[in-house]
Image (cartoon, rainbow, N blue to C red; front, side, top):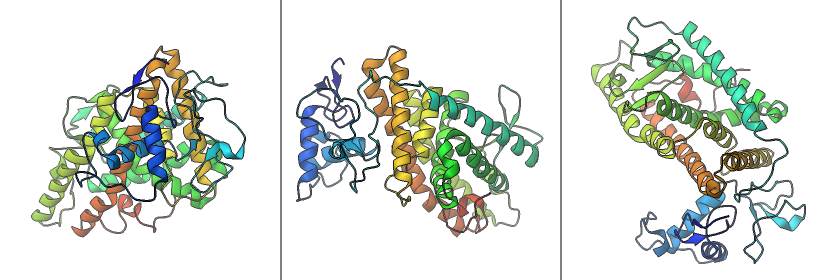
Length: 388
């Protein structure tokens, strides 16, 4: 592996450490900081230092996000600078928060690791995603009232309609139903899970999926339209259409105006963050599919049942290995660690925006725009029953 820059301190390094592209000095610093009893304190007091190497707290947090972002599982490295070897079955070879023995090792970030079946998971997810979208498209076009003046049109000539509260309620139910079909088709293990665990995965995934899919579709279809968000396959919200989102005739004008104002703030804030993450990374179709898998199984630091944790680690490991093989086949093996680091940072952006969504939805609830039966609001609560 040629010299590359450490993702934390930007010094040259020939090897990845702790599963990510960081130098040996950052690895040693992280391990020592992780084991210390006295907590680190940010020099600036903000926990957001731009030059992280000058602040122990921010340096540690950045490394921690990179390491834990790939599953919270880490191989205990040897003292040498050798690349990772094949997985070992020894109990002491892997570390997990609760010393679980059934957690498989996370994917290697050093390129060149061969696979028995290349891209099989990507191919399965692509087929499942395309099939899901056929169902979504048919259901949306048959359920939503057609508009007399469609604003935009896809290259395959079906109209895009400005979203309203009524259309969002309908399309979100369609999305949740088809996500169950997608998961069953894409991940064979999903069928054997309990209904509780299935529903947990879908609820945990749907918001990241909603943001990720929209950002990728805008990037590929309408890259020059600012403040634009796909609310579903066939509906959208833009800066111009935000004021028409509140389609309930008996609402006071100031409520309608407040709704549009909050939507515009969302378009300029979280929507733009997700869009920038996809655009700046120039995400390809295969990388988008990989992101679907990573977001679906991103269950660490949640209230997920213990049985879901090893499944999540296993699927993330598989897809990261497939990405490595893809980059190697495309002649980008020397940059694959950096590229995978970029992909993992997108997962963090999507999860951050998803975590902030309940508060934004609560604002609509307080404005009496959403009620307890609004689908997207219910998904942040416990009362909605799975569509099975």
